[in-house]
Structures are given as C-alpha cells and as structure tokens.
Image 1 (spheres, rainbow, N blue to C red):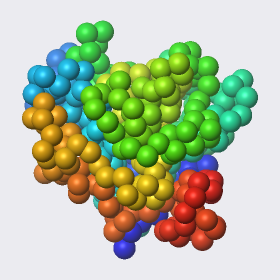
Image 2: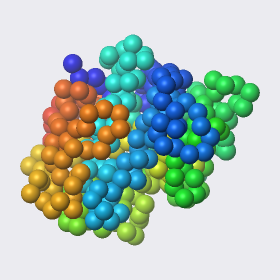
Image 3: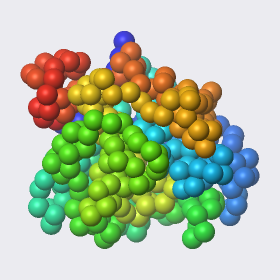
Length: 338
C-alpha cells in the first residue's frame, strides 16, 4: 500500500520520525570508507546517510557523453525530476528500514507558503525552531542537527566539497546562512506560473530551455533566477549550496516539495509526455525516457519507471484537487490544497 507524504509543519509525527530516521542513518556505519569512494582529505568511515551525499555529488560530476555540456547526470536537463524522485524513494526505503516502520512517508516543506510571508520573517519561521529542524549558524547550534565538538553523537558533516568542487573527508558541524544569497523564498505565484506550462521540457534540454522542468529546477525566467528549487538551496545557504547539499536534512524536505509540484503538474497535464524519447540524440544519454539513470546505491531505474509511483507513495495534498478529499482525489484545476 502506498505511504502518505505529509506537510512537516502540519504533522508533528512525520517530523519527529524524519528527524529520528535521518539521525539513525547518520549513525549507521556498515563499512564503506572515504577511500572506498575515492574521496581525498581526512580518511574515515562514512555512514549510510553520507552515501547519499556522495551519490548526489558524483551524479553532479558525471557528464556522459562529454557532449552534455553543463547538463550532468542529475541536473540541468530533463532527468532532474525523475532522478531526484528515485533518490527520494531510496531514502524513504532506508528510513522505513531503520525506523522499523513500513508506513513512514517522507515529509515535505511547503516553502512557498513561507515565501508568501514578509522576507524579514522567513528566517524565524516554525521550521527553524529548536523543536523542528533548528536554525542557522556556522555551525548550526540549535535543534536536532546542532554540532557539539565534545559530543561524538552530534550531527557531523563527514564529507563535503572543497573550493575546487572535489569531494573530501572532513569532520565539522552543519552550516546554514539564511537569506545571504537570496532575499526570500519562492512564492505560490511562482509555483502557479510553473504549473501553467504545458510542455515538460524542450530543446536544447538545458538551463536555457523553456518548459516546466527548467522552470521548476529554477533556471528560468532569467530575470528572477534563481527560482523555485534553486532559490530554496540558495536561500538556506551554507551546506545547501555545493554539490554535497544532502548533508543538510532540509535538502530532502525541499526535494520532496519539488516532487509534489511535479506530481501536481502531472495531474494538470496528463496529456503532456516526458521528453526526450529514445529516438533523441545520443548526446542526451541518461536523460531519455528509457535510459538508465546514474545510480551509486542500487540498480538503476529509468525516467519511465518514475512517471507513475502511485503504488509507492502519495501526497496528503497537491496543488490540484477540486475538493479536500485527501490523498489521490483526482480532481482537476489549480485549487491550492497545501
């Protein structure tokens, strides 16, 4: 039976289980080391949670074939949404395992509701309270991911990226710097503008493309970029900025909301297919509908396998449901239920 993914600010049980689960994964060391992953710097074991950090970084550093330009194996092209959906599913399974709870669903952060509030209020909203995800700092000093150098069980960043963008071993606290590089979070009107777009993606399948994927990823429109997904990373700042951004558990709350927006778009535009297809140029290898997506932690999946995941999870509310019937109501029209 499909699990339900819920708003982290409206469901304390989901929030607490998420925090418990990621801390359990962070404390689980099953043998892999930084040396096994080809990572320089301080050599040490890495946790199950850290393997997801490495996977994300390596995907961002993978350009196959080289003619991809700046389009990598997980970003800046059509595969951005299905690749991250795949990552979320695998993390959700790991969380269910360590929690011993097969009904656990990843929560999402509805950042557009926060983005509709005055910019000055956004750094002090409920998500950043000590009883939720904690606040900002270098290192973060409040909440469940605070750093205490005398406590080996406190949240520690064990792999990150150096100034050249290379993965390395380290041992430090989590960093956040709210609103230093973007003044405010995305708004509901930003999401509405993306949901209005009828094409999933378009040539040249890059950061310059028109279409829903590129608008949701945040490269368009140029006059407001970074937008949506990218703007959330930039607004949170700190460890959310580099390719090792899954170091911050907020990463998954952001991407779960991004996935919820894609699920909403799929409901609004059922006639709009994923593109490109298998007949597209080999320069788009890894982004075509039946290409194997880059995977470090399991057998690879294809974008096609990620288009209908209704047997795996559902959201408690989409941006499209005609009535408050809960999960899977299947209504039409952009009626905000979040």
